[in-house]
Image 1: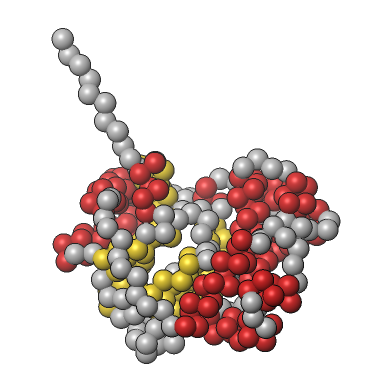
Image 2 (image 1 turned 45 degrees about the vertical axis):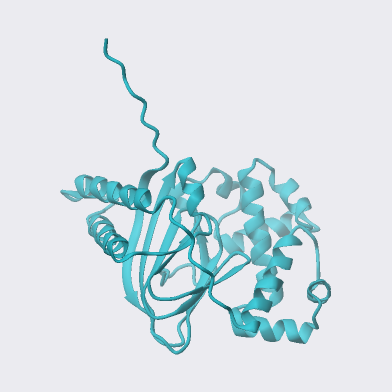
Length: 290
């Protein structure tokens, strides 16, 4: 008698976004973004520092960092290097993806080659995509690329996290401040109140932000609030409920701020498809450098 053997799939890659291979100049600073798909950043050569929500991560040659969906992240060049980066973006589902949340790992030479080949397959497939007139070969190329990403994830699944490198005292303090902002994002707090919670003066907090962020404390705190608003909307809360939860005095003002920051109203966001949920904090009309 025949018996089917079940196959558990820890993850399924169901959409591709992009893959780029780029060298960023010394002094490069990317203001940041968040989007509803996964991003994997590999440092081929050089050094960089990245933020992921409240975390600050020092990256060096041979390391790969994953950004989960809806995680606000930034990256900049470090130690007078021009980092060579390979960046892979895709949408995936499955319980196995939890392993890659906030994960930074050191790749072996074989894994580095596999990552590079996977990026090439994704880039080739994306180049064939045309929403108006499907190009010949796209379906096969996209399927092959999606399988390559799944095989890469399978190879990296269970990978030990990389040892954290020492951050500068300023970066450590910046990380501590970000943790406070995230912990209190549902409160209506002034910059002075945030500084008090962080145990520092307003001037010192502003000085740290001028070094590690392209925006001021108040603007960054608003970004954290909007990120939390997305999570609450995804959880099924109404616009009015989210506005109250996050300390906005008026629902109309929250509606205006949310639309200004994301390009969508809260209602549109709640019903948007995965492909439509793409947010860039600055210069939303431009193609993101990441």
